[in-house]
Image (cartoon, rainbow, N blue to C red; front, side, top):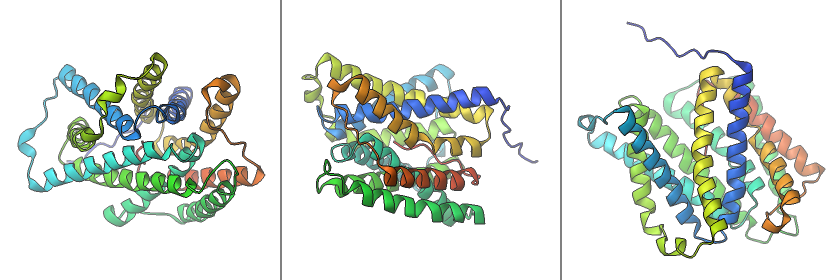
Amino acid sequence: MTMTLHKPEVNLKLGLLYCLGSSVFWGTQTIAMSLIVKRISPSAVAFYKLLTALIFLFFYIAWTKKIPRILKFDLVYAGLFVIAGAGLAISYGSFAWAFRYVSPGNAQIYIQSARILFILASIYVFKEPFSKRQWFGLLVLVPGFYLFFQNQIEVPEYNSNYGVGVGLVLISAVGWVLFGLTHKQLLTRFKTSECLLGIYVVAVLALCPFSGIDTLMNLALFDWLVLLYIFASNLLAFVCFSKALTVWEASKVSGFSCTTPISTNILIAAAAFAVPWLGIQYEALDHKAIFALLLIVYGAFIVCSGSKTVPLESS
């Protein structure tokens, strides 16, 4: 008996709308995170993002009455859940801490490495194909990252800790790859909702010691609104991304997602101009930085649009 592969019901306008929605929600979420990590511990932000997702998923499973199949657990798959949860916790935690050292625009650019590493790791682990066109995209992407880093590290506003921030984003990317690979293997036995439920539980438990509940009591109303927006935008971005996959081909959705750094930097510039009192960290990119950014986006687009693996969206 052959398995029928999913074929999206093509709707260009609706697909574009969903992709734009996910791009805007992820872009504005990074701006919000850069603001809130000045008030509370970045680890606490990561903890509550995951806790909110876990609660939402729990109610979704209860509403749809899709009871998890506990009997399918064994030591091997239990270990995979632990690895995936640890990877997700590392990814969320490291990415949140990175905002102490780099701007939201820079963080969004460097986190593109997660989708590339995920595809490359899938080639090694799952023996997935990698075309010459994708190798060309990789050859464009790597110099783009190097040129952008060299350009930004010379910006006077950044201190010697800029490298620390970039390192944290790269650690986040590695954690995301670890989560993505083990999640993919878990899908051979469990449904998506079951996988995410187990992974979220492990990740929340891992970050629980850093919840910082006492610091929440000292937050102002505006800080609470920012925190709530982070939670809401995180869920809405994933919903838009999932919906986009139902009306567009996976390669198109992945390719469009690579433009998120551009939309994020545009949103940051607009926010810095419209509400300067927020103190959003914004750097005016010179021609060298813009050229490097375009290389990164173009290279990532070539690699992702040519892959049958849909890179999971990061952090």
